[in-house]
Amino acid sequence: MERRKDAGHHFLYNKAYGQHILKNPVILNSIVDKAGIKSTDVVLEIGPGTGNLTMLMLEKAKNVVAVEIDPRMIGELTKRVHSSPHKHKFQLIQGDVLKIQLPFFDLCVANIPYQISSPLVFKLLSHRPIFRCAVLMFQREFAMRLVAKPGSEYYCRLSANVRLLAKVDHLMKVAKTNFKPPPKVESSVVRIEPVYPPPKINYREWDGLLRLCFSRKNKTLGAIFKKKNVVRMLEENYKIFASAKEAKQSEFDITNLGKEEKMVDVQDEDVKGMEDEQDQGEFKKKVVEVLQKENIGELRATKMDIDDFLLVLGIFNKEGIHFA
Image (cartoon, rainbow, N blue to C red; front, side, top):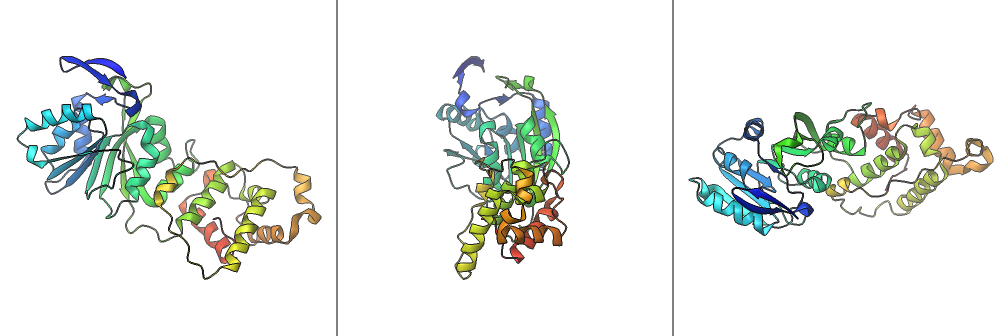
């Protein structure tokens, strides 16, 4: 914890919870304005801290539901809200936002603890019923990855997964001097609008494909898919699906898209050995034929948009080749 002077007394900010209180009223008001809060809206706030954003939203929303894990912050926030004429519109939930079941909400507006950014984004996107939009503060680099487009420096698996499920826009940059205590990095505010209806695909397969493609995102799909360990994995999946076509596939939780698990290990191998016909095997020939027949072997993950990934997924699935 770090001791800081706040509101006339000493207050301990807990670094484990990523507590950095946004203090600039101009930015606070701008966030609320950009959220477009209606008088009929239920707004979800995550990590409200001492309530700087909360108090502004209570003036506009039907209800504000705040989720806070720190009992000390809850004490500060409760005292502040109880002195407000809008206290009847406030609901507080104590707990870890990643572990609790979220209530109904129309909007999510929050200064997010940076260490939970990725899992929280996908928890929100998996929430039903689908909310209208979220206006969230993130670490600048994470925000740039969220909004990144194919071919840009920050485009990655996270970018593609989010673009599948939502439209994301960068709203504004926020300097670290606007926080108490100031974080070590700059921040950005983004707007996330979920796609409705959500795409009807096998998310387990989708995630398997993206993990494979982004394991070496600058290499061509042809180079990646010919690797021995990749061919071995695809062949194992092929045999499993071939022997159990009628088996019902288990549900895949969308929140898993946000997990930073180990990517598929695609190590560089001897190219000449890879091209040796005697070494390929029948299944590898099948994979190569699909890549060549559909002209997708030259695609690179770093420049592929959502339609490209869906195309590749559909082509291989049609041939009985699966990624999970």
